[in-house]
Image 1: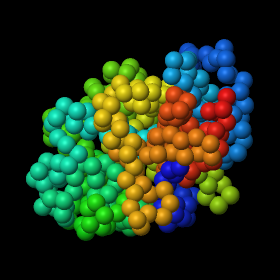
Image 2: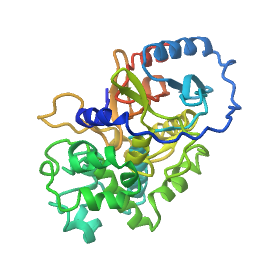
Image 3: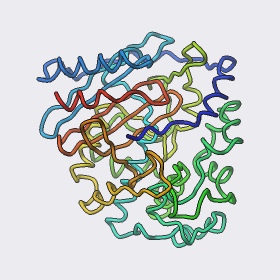
Amino acid sequence: MKTKILSLSLLAALFAAVSCTKEPVIAPANETCEADYTSHPGHAAYQDALNYYASNSPAPGSVIGVKEQGQPEWIGADGFSNLEYNTAFLPCTQFRCGSITKVFTAVVIMQLIDEEQLTLESTLDMLLPEISGRIPSAELITVKQLLNHSSGLKQPTDDDINYQLSLINNPDFIGGMDYKSRLEHYVYDKPLMHVPGTESYYSNAGYWVLALIIEKITGKSIAENIEERITAPLNLSSTYLTKQDDHNVARGYNFSGNLLKDVTIWDRADSDGDPAAGLVSNAHDLLVFGEALFTGNLVSDSSLALMKETTSFPSCNGDCGYGLGIESWQTAEHSGYGKNGSSLGVDANLIFFPDQSTTIVIFSNYGGGNNKDVIDLLLDI
């Protein structure tokens, strides 16, 4: 099971600084959800599973969504999305999705492949000659390697001390950068972590480069591509990549010593608008997207099969094998495909289990990973 989280060194440094960094919190609008899930035939059992998950999590708030193909969805929420105003977490509350964003970016790439505008073996020097001289071994780095984290590109959040210190001490500076500026400051003219295609190294920067490829081929921004190709056709009205007013989005929390702290300022700075980690959505929209993707309604069957193929390397020790934008998931009892998105105040999960034809969304506004035993409970209902 994938549980990618921020580096421990960054967490430790942040917690040392968090007590002296605080931003004003705007009151969220009074929110109501039109959908009523109490009449769902599995409501009582699903609610028990949510209660179990919430009671075993330090998160202030949680939401779980379940959608079996051909059956109505169920979504339940628990706790608070905003502790400053004791705002209840509702089934329709929007939240940051972290690296689930990568699935959306990967879908756009695979659609372009289906349209024969590039291939998985297209190389960086062919697609982006204007930057290839600034990335070592650009002639070896392929689209597939960018998608499955084997390109060797860095991961500034984890391995660049200048990025980490800037994020901690000056989140407005990091938050003011778009992904192109981050490539300029933290990736270009830097050595690779390994020879392309020989190891896995998780890298948001690979998805920044994929966004450049998408924008060059289509002449439109990555946000426009996601809207036109995914969110508009699927009517995902609560999903967006662009930076927007976020006072209605669930705030993120983590511990500094024994105190639970609001860490939204860092989550926002590190992710908002980012094609690797910046998506905002809610449980309903992610359920619709997940079912559409894994039932073949967004990419061709051959492209979906390629997305699910996991590449691992002999040096891999643990969960370091990746598919194309998605990852394989293994619980104690079930196997699936999906993506985890984690940051300081985010733990978001979108998983599809083919044997049960079921899509599951689990979110809590506490970062660093949460126990996922509840998945087996949900699938056995």
